[in-house]
Image (tube, rainbow, N blue to C red; front, side, top):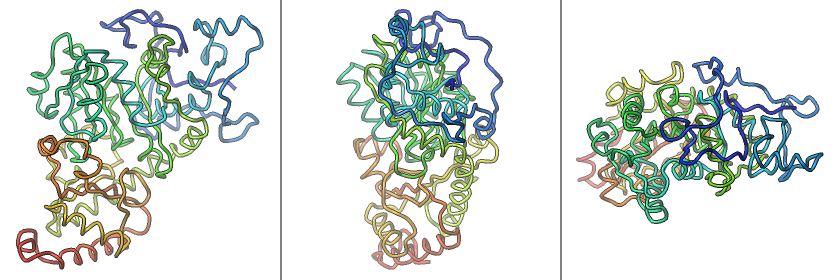
Length: 460
């Protein structure tokens, strides 16, 4: 069966783009092929997923077949030459060379991801960090400049502040991405290639003003890259002006805490450039997704919208109840969140404000005590990094997922020592889980010193 990527422009596999091409065919270089008119795309992610082409199995199975081969044969010797020159490929003859280039099963998942995010194309990778790294290497280049939000996942912050400067001479300026004047001031004319943000910052849950950032980036000739890991389905950055959307698919999209994967969603020309034989970051670095992993994920994507609705519903209810307890809770769905109105304006109707909330317990010691009781005494959730699992996951961000940042950088980003990042799950009943939370909170507060009790409140 033919395998078609959700792309208005076909993928050319190995064809090398013109010099200086970043894959967009704009002022930074032009691609050789003109894209035909894009088909109408559904604005609701669930509708877009349902409208995407369904890939049947080889023998008519309702699920697509898994193409586990690493290499592919051809019938004629000249076909190989034509594959390597880009005359033939997945979109030109349904032909493949090697699964590090393209694999039919992984391409089918890419088509679903492109539909989900409303982009021309998508390429799925072995991890979220490989997706982020390859995009930045492809777009920025040696000695280039990035303007990034000061509050990012710790691994991304380390990539921009340490690894890329050391290996590629890339320079990054970290700013308050909510401050348009600061973003504009940080841009270096002719040097800034990318503005990089997260839709919802990890872990502080600030909501990026994507239309504003897209406008500022494009006026400067830069691209806006948005990490949408926290808010799949909830927000569609590409529909708001983002050029590229990246994901750690390991999180909400997978939903099972059993897969490591990533995705790059954007123009088909970008995927072409990143798969170039001579200088494509994906081709040469090889963060290849396993076809069996792609098959697993393709079966989970159709119910992602339902899962996100329940994650959001429970997170909103827990946040409201925590607030009534007098706790310092941050959740964009609460009316007093500084970006509540922004998220309502940008978000896709019906999916809420996401499944993440933050609880500031004041000190790391109090945060650790609460998490201990939540896991070991009342079984409310699990102390673990990551997010998007059906069970609630919680960690103290300052000593875990944001530990790559210097203390000063964490303070500037608003990551306090007692901040608990909580990914709210949906198993069990809501009332069952809330009763477990209340019991753990009471036990933690009973152990407070008199000074802590006076500062942070009495037991409930």
